[in-house]
Length: 357
Image (cartoon, rainbow, N blue to C red):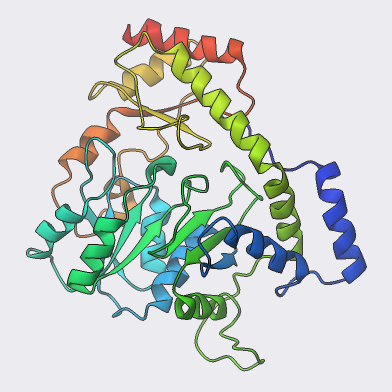
């Protein structure tokens, strides 16, 4: 289904030697500082980067740093990976599951505005999700924040390539399965220096330049070893990005004769990501998955039928989820990896053509 590819031992060796020489292994060492600086260079000047153990922690700590009322509602799309909802719960808030736009699979500001009047409690935040790496337009969300005072955070877990500005705090995953991965890890990008400082403190026991804990916090730092992988991954990123795009365009080209198979807007053309999710006719995903399995082609419903179908979040307040239910029955993850070759692409396309053609 997927074969993640992290930097090789040879690519890591120069960075590991630097760790050996410095004998600094964690706690914001020189490699981590360099890694964060290189990440920051991808954004506009003044953007702060705070690395963390994983993106779920990053989201939870960002919400916690915003000092939102405990138990208040945080609106999230029902169509997202469960990590989004877990982060909300970990921050002491209540996930409020709302429906998404059927075309781009994202929560929309106008939908949040419409839902606010009938909200089942005080609403303090919204998490906007970039589905599988497709970044939404953030300008309307900035307007919503300005109008309502509701905090807005972006779950950009899979959007390393597409995220190039952080007017709203955004959290990116560096999990091994992502286009740029380090094994486990994540980072917050934000133009709010005070927020960055608070999240940094929350990743390090609430320490603020001294060994006195200023607030209840956790330990969510990245080690020098994780930073070594990150630096080597960034070294290879320009080449690897082209490989991801080449693999995606090959898959798109192989399916030009299948109008029933719809790719996300811009997927493999203007942005790179590590998964391929296509929309099929409503209700067809399960049958197509069975057909492809019979042909020896694995598939994955990466987000299942939505957060509301998981026992952990079945009791959360929700709006009408008609579009989420439709997407859950229609979206299917196809095999995809950076080194997907012509034969594998042809096999996937042939199996799909046999099922939906």
